[in-house]
Length: 222
Image (cartoon, rainbow, N blue to C red):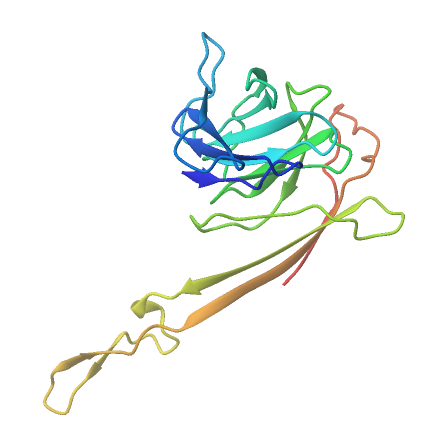
């Protein structure tokens, strides 16, 4: 199961399972819980619920799943309010609301995008923020004011990359012993991939001649 943070009042703990969210009440510890299936009739969210987040201004929580979808649910009864279309390359493993609650950001492993959804028009992606993710690990992100007046978003990342024995700098992955025996080289070195990405999330430039909006500028600092 994947355990989420407590809702704002701290009285409940929401946990994600296969096609189900279970709600435990902290005032009565034990196995008893409220089961909220994410599959109801035709509109449903399948897969394991891998991450949850709570709206800062409404009685709503969001669920991400390994089925590449995100859904919005009522905190009162767990009813499905909105199911976002599957736009990610793989499962969603982290999501976050904007401070005003109008936007939801979603991301996943081995996925080069963080998608922003306008929950007032949830049928399509509002914009995409590019990032470098080449690992199956759960990749987190957060939202925090970083500039006093400009609409900027900063994303930082760090991941370790283990080189294959054949990728050594001298081109030799094996050494010969004194009697001609093959000796495997020591553990391959580890490279650190560190990057800071600065994205513009304000109004985009005017539409191009073909009628397509130009993508938001992005600066990547390694």
